[in-house]
Length: 357
Image 1 (tube, rainbow, N blue to C red):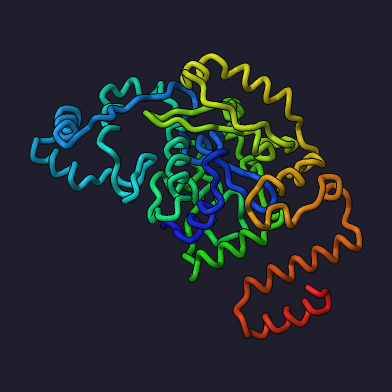
Image 2 (cartoon, rainbow, N blue to C red):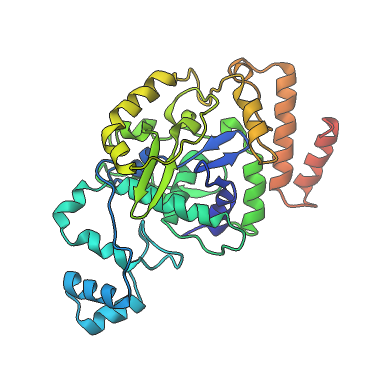
C-alpha cells in the first residue's frame, strides 16, 4: 500500500538540481547503497540504452517477437499494459514503457547492467518532475521511496516491522504499511518540520551488513544514466548517510561529455577520493561548524536547521538551557500531533505557556 501523503510530503522537499531532499537538519537522498540493500539488486555494471522510437507497431512487434505473444495479444498488452509495480513503472503505477522490452532480448546480458543505477535514475527523474506544481502523479518505484522513509525516519509514521528477513530476500520485504493517516499531507508536513536530528537514522543497515554488505560503489560521485536520461549523483551532500562528517559540499559539477566513460574508468579513483576527503564521524549526524550556517543561507526551506545546533553542542552533554530548548521543542511537536480541543491538547497548551512557546 502506497502512502500518498507520506510520499508527497518528501517529494515537496526534493531539489532536482542536487537530487536531494532539503530537510530541517540538512540534505539527505536515496543512495545506490539504499537501492542495493532495499531491493537486493546490483549497483555494478554498465548503463543501458533503450530504444527511444518505440511506436505502437514497434512495441507490438517486440512483444510478439520476444515475449511470444500473438499479434492481437501484443496490441492488447500495449494498450492495457499490466507489467505492474516495478522500478520502471510510469505515472499510472501499473504500466511500463514498451521500450524496456529490448533490455530482455538476451537474458544473459541482464547481469551486466547496473540495475540499482537504473532504478535510481528513473526515480530521481520522476521526483524532479514531481516538484512541478501542475504534476498530479509520480512515476518510478514509489515503494522504494516509502521503504527508504521507513528506514531513515522511524518516528514519522506507523509501519509494521516483520523483523529480519532471509538473506536472499530484499530488505524492503521487512516493512508493511500499517494505515494511511487522515489529512496525511498536512499531518506529515507538520511531523517532518518538527523532526529533530535524533529522530533520524542516518545508517539504518548497520545491523544487517552480514546479509547486505555495504557497496563501496555508492561513494562514487558523478552522473548516472538510464537510457536517454542522466542525473547527478552526489553523495558528498549526504555524508552522514555514509557515517562521515558532513561539511559544505562542492558545487554540482557539469555533466561530462561521456557519462559512461566516467562511470567505467574513474569509479575506483572517485571512491578513493571520497574516503580521503571525508572523515569518519565520531557520532551520528556530526557536521562541521560552518555547515548549518551555510545550509540555512543556501536552502529555501523555511525551517532548515531550525532544530539543531552546532556539531560541538550536539556532541556535548545537555546543559540546563539545552534541556529547556528540548522541552519547548517536544511541546511544540506534541501540540501539532494531538487533536485540537482535546484534554491532552489543553494540558500541553498550558505547559507551553510556562516555557513561553
